[in-house]
Image (cartoon, rainbow, N blue to C red; front, side, top):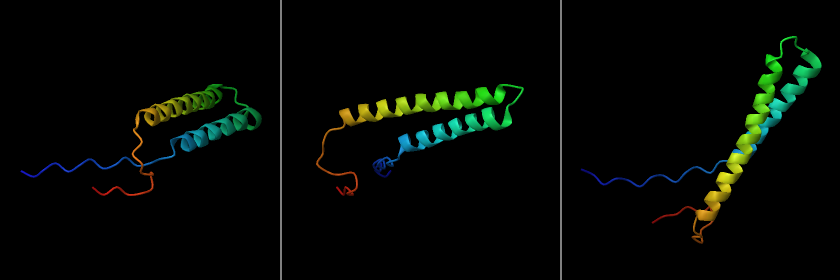
Length: 86
């Protein structure tokens, strides 16, 4: 039986930028639906509104999560770009 290998370090992602981009795209879609399409059925409008609302919630969630992780991570003296070799 072999030793268990250590878990890989998590990838550093730009969640805030990704969620912000999606939220802006939903807002643009909402404007297009309201100005250009002018649907008789309001499902398209509410779909866009839900996309914007969930995006704003996602921004709040990710920013709070990142702040919580940042507060609980001990300072190790290594920057995030330097590889760590034991």
